[in-house]
Image (cartoon, rainbow, N blue to C red; front, side, top):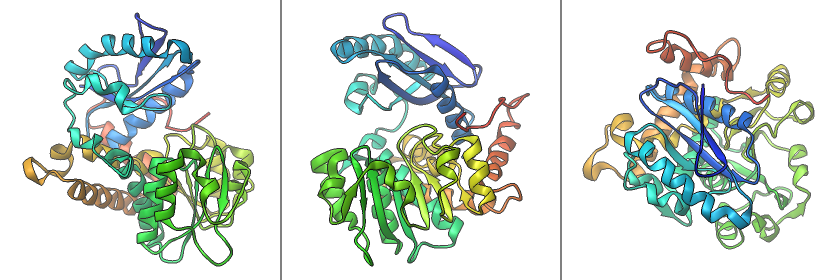
Length: 355
């Protein structure tokens, strides 16, 4: 694992496998981005590539900038990153603090398919695939979602997409949370996914205050009654203390590395199926490399065709690995590591889990 210090601004890029043919992953911007979190996100991205059979490294980085110097810091990063993108060495995606418009100057050099950035209802195809992929993973683990009560923590664009995908499969949306609050569905009903999408488009994270249902503190999401918990706010948000109080059949991911090692142990001991983030979030890769991963080229590259290919692949991955004697998460790890072993002399040390 290597670190590239940015020379034009305060920041860095961490590449998990230094000698891989190329790397990709999330860049974030904030007054202080910790390298430890970037290392964990890079490892998760490596396992995502491996899970779908791609010889690439995960990567992640941070730009440390206050709001008053943000514009200049982003410009400096773009100038330094452009040759990396042109060479395929590092392909950045917008994480917390950045958006697609910030990275738009790099797109002319980016070898990935531009359809990944296409939007509908204010949600990019990549974000939509993250949501529908997580739902496909849960549906595969539970052999269907009809009547299952789903709670979404950290509900952003991917969460909005997940709500729609889950409802289409007969799930009941029991509650959604953002940093602004937690909205629980009224007794005996479920939240309306169309209302969620409309409110999110108009109000962003404050959409929870616009829904039918009581809006309380964000932390109340952890005590919500549900069968499935989708976790999507940040790295390590689901720790051992929270895990000890959760009673759900399945935990899935809308954000990389959302649970800690101790949380995984506690959840599995309680009988919960814990799905790997790097499987749940594999969908966006199909929009970035539709020819390589789905055999789609030319006019056949459509959002619908990509989503079908992505959800089918994720469904098959979960069905193959969820029954592993050590649990679904480690089953997915073994699957990814078996592919890494075909082109690496040594496996990377440490699995994609928050400390």
